Amino acid sequence: MFENLSERLERSFKILKGQGKITEINVAETLKEVRRALLDADVNYKTAREFTETVKQKALGQDVLNAVKPEQLMVKIVHDELATLMGGTAIDINIKGTPAVILMSGLQGSGKTTFSGKLAHMLKTKRGKNPLLVAGDIYRPAAIEQLKILGEQIGVSVYAEEENKNPVKIAQNAIQHARQHGKDLVIIDTAGRLAIDEQMMNEIESIKKAVNPQEILFVVDAMTGQDAVNTAKEFNQRLDFNGVVLTKLDGDTRGGAALSIRSVVDKPIKFVGTGEKLDAIDVFHPERMADRILGMGDIVSLVEKAQEQYDEEEARRLQKKIAKNQFDFNDFIAQIQQIKKMGNLKDLASMIPGVGKQIKDLDIDDDAFKGIEAIIHSMTPSERSNPEILNGSRRARIAKGSGTNVQEVNKLIKQFDETRKMMRMMTSGGGKQAMRNLKRQ
Image: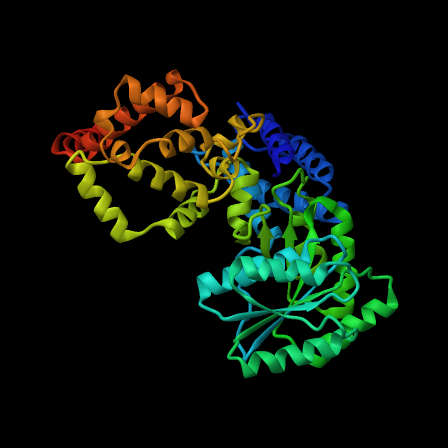
């Protein structure tokens, strides 16, 4: 995500490297490259021009402090303007109402149905809502069945009327059903439609008028670039939607839609889809996205993802086991499961400052832990709880059972032993004293 743009922007800032001060000439050279980088990322031409002009005015209007290099100052200005361009701050979704109604809209193939499931899952698990998904797409084959499968996976009810071909009536009946069954949130999945299809646009306008939704979200495939922005503009003129959802941001997207859509449509990006899993949904934070575009990582989001999986009671139990040198393979595999729940491994690693650029050409498989898990699962309960008993014959049996070899089993056990020693040291008095000594230096 944004890899090419990040590289191009980094190269443009190097023009200022070694310069003693910011001048109109070196700023012009830098921003010429910045503008090219934005246009190559499929950012709207007018948006790119206005962006670089704003950065130029701010850069020339500032005195460079002795402690700050011109290159660093330019990065700071570009960062702040990128965040402003994308909306400045995160905008929350409106889910007030009895029930609150969210209407999904967008082109066919943009990912509305999948996102409807993701949104229901997020609002159920993180906001304590009791949602109802509504199958309002009566045209696409298997659309109703797809939504039912998603609902089953996340434990959310789905309202559908397979024989009814009136999506307006289906939506109205669904809201009545929600009231009768204590649902406090209704998410209506609608058919994909083109902005130039007058009949279909009239239909979704009729649904809007009939159900009076608290929130209308326009779902757009980020990989369509500038076309996504133009489509959003057309839909907004008809629906006056409340926010944008960018899907497939984990794909090979140039980022133009994310950078342009707010300035062109004047509606906030509220959510982004970052993968195929049903928990691969993030609230859109402009400042954090600006950090990632400029290669600064996104530690805040990484910490938030970790906290979602963090169990305070489990952490205390684990700390006691480590202190007593009782950390075993059951604990080890439990930690692996928590990491996997946090999301795509490469995406997580790219949130660490400086790491994104280093791993951009690496193929980090989400199944990277598969071999480790196979080895641990091939151990008996007694072996997992007492790693000390893993002698040669046991290791040979584990290798055979896991489809690996003895060398791989030995390597894992050695890594586990080293991890256990390090954890033991960090929780011991010596480890704490060493940390205090480091802080004094």
